[in-house]
Length: 242
Image: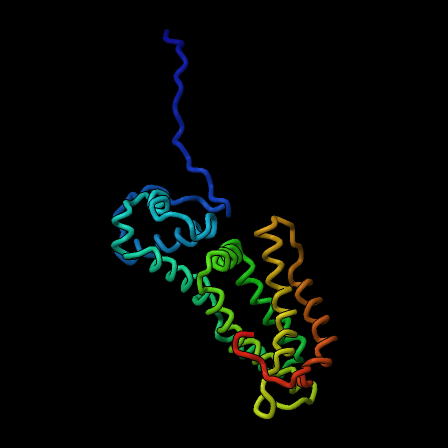
């Protein structure tokens, strides 16, 4: 009787990414061009969020179990791939109904701002969004500038208009948005964004985000009447880059 112990080697598993997701397994079937492109973009988002935009496409190709030349068939340059990541993470997740939520005069302004920032927090307070946004700024890419300009034009101006109506101040047609008004909105917006920095950059726990959002909106509204619709020290309208 053969009593020799036989050892069976278990299949080697790939270690998870830092965000907890599992790396792509070797392809077991042929993917259509559209499926392959989607797979590349999905993994590129994870890869750059983990390593920053200094990450090499050679390493990305290894994680995808494809050759670097195949990757370049879909994205001829690294810049083209990075641009697609911007489109995927920042623009595709933008909700065009946010402006309608803020403008909905049938609801109290506090509820509208809480509703918007609660939904916005769900979109941006993710490992990928926060880290890609930070890495973009450190790398000197224009993601931040483009996204913040969109935010200022579509959201900040809308909030200022609703605040002025709430406080009985001049409309935007009568008086352009001022620098201090923009800074006031930034004080609220940046405090929401910073929750993600604490969680995904500093690895600090952030609990009960909905309650935090409600608190920050209330604190903002308590102080807003001192700034909204009031002339700033120079009487100048806000610069577009503010």
